[in-house]
Length: 177
Ligand SMILES: [Mg+2]
Image 1: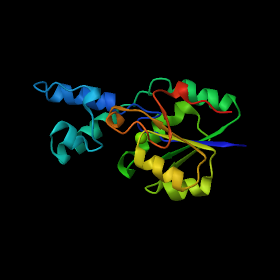
Image 2: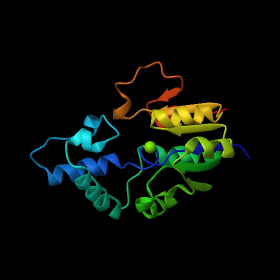
Image 3: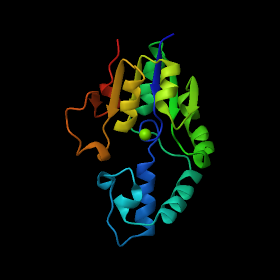
């Protein structure tokens, strides 16, 4: 069976939306919206301390994360087309139980936690992979994954348009043979 690998945070699960809403309720003097999240370092995006951000994530992951728009339909379509769908995620250990709880709705075939996606993807040898983080797309390419998709998110907007991957604005644009 052919395998398609997917990232979880900001590909299957929307963690930015809840973070933005939580931030707004805590710091109502700041106007923050999703499109402002331009850095992977949320401390840098929002100008708050790392400790405060860590504490906010604890609150956010106490509740189930919503799905990214189109993500559930996407996984359903892949599985319907006969793909084995495996999530490969770098979620930190502290918040992995929340992820395990939240991805149940996708009925994934497997779930891999790793800080080294290149090594895991080399072992897994999927035919395709999608991530919102360009560094992880680079790792997939180095691992020899034939089709690498970059899902656009606000932190990619300023990136050179000519990334060497299939850059998609939504899951709907991922078309596989
Ligand atoms: Mg991600």
